[in-house]
Length: 275
Length: 162
Image 1 (tube, rainbow over the protein chains, first blue to last red):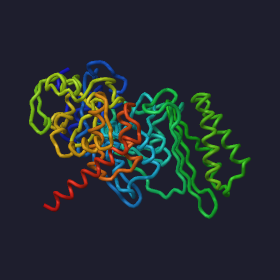
Image 2 (image 1 turned 120 degrees about the horizontal axis):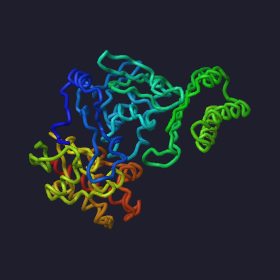
Image 3 (image 1 turned 90 degrees about the horizontal axis):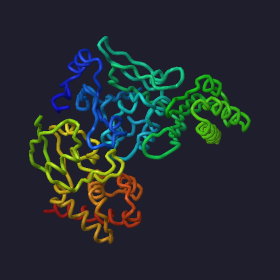
Image 4 (image 1 turned 120 degrees about the vertical axis):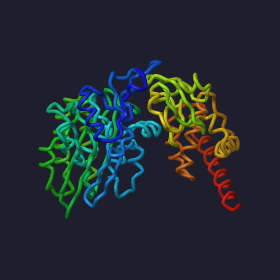
């Protein structure tokens, strides 16, 4: 492939028109996912490649009192460098855990969320925060909850032929956040996954509780979350144990080993919340 | 196709395929042997360069990604005062790097000190984890970077007073 065959649109409208003209084209931002598994002398690139990393419309940051909106082509480092008020702690924890600084300088937040082979490290944190993503294609733009990018089996379901252009993250007060990476360190592998939790208490009552776990599959049990809500803190040992068992059993679809670790993490997190 | 970018401060033109990795272009077309092509998936840190001032693994960069951008390799960086600060700090702490990791570690320290003049021990070890070589122990590495930071701060102070 020649360099000239890589399409480099100058703005978003040119990109969208290219996507209409070349429906099978691969969008290339940081490229870390595409190159991660390639150790050969030459890089194998898809036949039609559209380089989008430098498009200004995909690199904007917009901050309001209620949310922050991030352009999908901001690198993970650029997101980490946002001022504290624009960067939820849970997201910062997730970003710091991604690979090494040089990789974070290339990888983009949109790429981290749009990976189709598995869920990457930032996904559970943003799923917990109920982030919205803006998807664009030839028919227009729409915002959807990030959690909808997982199918009924919890597998990645990022639609084909679609651009993830922006991420909107609600800025809320959280009393407790936790993020734990399990499995092999470094690059995501079959046995690695990330566990994220955010909780808020009001007048001694658990007012908000969200827990997401994602690796090859994603898990967020909204029915269990709704049953935990409204309980008085501290939770009793019996309550904690019952919820941990529910989470562990649901997580057996991931793998027995991950399910066990998931149950332990939930128990630990609920214990921490109860103190 | 021929495209241009800035390499160690000079505008250069290169004819390349988009499937060429930057690390190979640097070594084979420009004879810049600082960056090494080893793991080829961004894990070993031996091929690090500064891309628009930020640390990046050149094995993870297809040629088309550097069009119009600025690349600095160890060869270019070694002509700067910042390099002298780092080298001096390393010598002061008795740090001797092996030939495999010196490229990555020197550039990683350069990138770290550029954005954080007085990094903590955790920040130093966090940044240097991009180059997982075992030729130096963490304590000596930390002392060496602290010494380099001190030299850099002194130099900048004297320059500001002139």
